[in-house]
Length: 271
Ligand SMILES: Nc1ncnc2c1ncn2[C@@H]1O[C@H](COP(=O)(O)OP(=O)(O)OP(=O)(O)O)[C@@H](O)[C@H]1O
Ligand SMILES: [Mg+2]
Image (cartoon, rainbow, N blue to C red):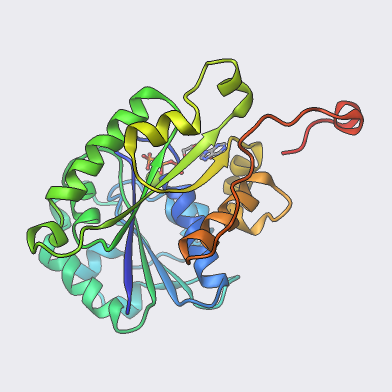
């Protein structure tokens, strides 16, 4: 059975695309045939993070409009077997995405893929709503700050009421919290919400905590999903999250500030 996963947040810039690239790659590395769809019409960040922007010829909207086949638009990842990307269109026409058009594409993808990862745009407008509409599972990406948590809460309301599962009265979309850009030092100083604070407010199961890490920007500048960087704390945290997503019981890490030892004081902290 194919699972459709939406990576959503409400608030912009919290790490949805970083997460879509990392989780999609992680699932494919575990042997599951996976496609990541960029729903962010007009922006196209996913193909930069996945380093395939020069290979985009046709996109999501071309397929919806019948200007290309799905096969023509899908881009195979260079590094990982089983991983494909369906890039977003750069059209300014936000109405280019239609529920029927998206449904047709998802139905075709379901015949081939185990996981379909939908990278949602920010906000709660049409693109974000369509990205959520067909989801079986949601990864709600949240930063440890009030505005992000508030917007994630709004997204949970939409997942409960405006998805196909909600309309059909089926089992609700399975929701998971992914807390990203977590900085335990700032949490200890009271400058950011703690994992417990966020869990208490949103009250959905915790999939993982991804630490704030310079390695994330470095990786995205190189067009390498951060999960490939097994040396980095953020890469390891995403790997843990993927394993939990697949049902493994993995203890949470990176929740408390690292006490700097002799070597890290001498040679710089870890990233
Ligand atoms: N764990 C992290 N540590 C440090 N920086 C991060 C982390 N996660 C994401 N970022 C940075 O935050 C910025 C926004 O990330 P990203 O593009 O993934 O967010 P987004 O939610 O998809 O944004 P948008 O709403 O615009 O689509 C990027 O510069 C990214 O490198
Ligand atoms: Mg994005």
